[in-house]
Amino acid sequence: MGRSLLYGAMMNDTNRTDSAGLAALAARAEGASATGAPVERWNPPYCGKIDMRIARDGRWFYQGSPIERPSLVRLFASVLKVEGDGETYLVTPVEKLIITVEDAHFIAVEVARHLEGEEPALTFRTNIGDLVTAGPDHAIELPDVLDDAFTPYLLVRAGLRAKLSRPVAMEVAEWLEKDADGIFLRSGGVRFAGPKGGLADE
Image (cartoon, rainbow, N blue to C red; front, top):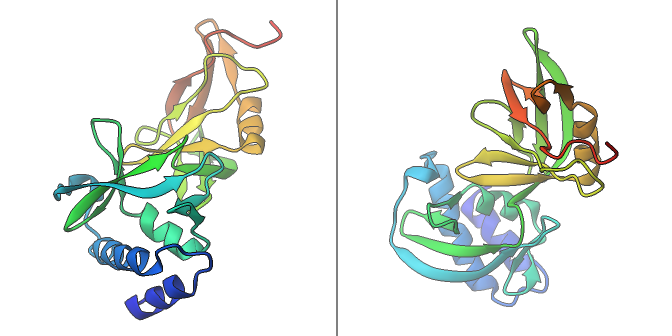
């Protein structure tokens, strides 16, 4: 999306409390994203905390109003990273700003199980359109107990995680395996340790 189209989308978005401010931020983020440089290597000056929030259900808000445009959400998501302090930063070439994340950065809304050679692999689609195959660079974090609240998380990039939606989590639960060492999940040649407490009905 060109800058003029992005500005038009921003200015036409409804219920915007500060559309000009968000449009300016979007323009800087667009410039950063267009460079193709890895965000995790950037270290611009820290410029404080911005009133931007990713809710538990994956929706994005700016100054209390939802960001309705999927293209804007994808743009901002492309310039996020998590640093060693555990905070999530929106990064442009000239600034980095802390945003609020209630749970995970993304939601995994779909999963496909396939084979890579003779090994099973799980490829997830997130709510912003990323395709991520669990493996050495994209770990799956499984909860300690397999119960009704079973909610795995997937490392997407740069410390950013996706929470598996309920339907996706239930699919993944069907692919758990068990041997003498415990419960585990295989994907991309990696064995991810499963619920240490075992099955809920055991």
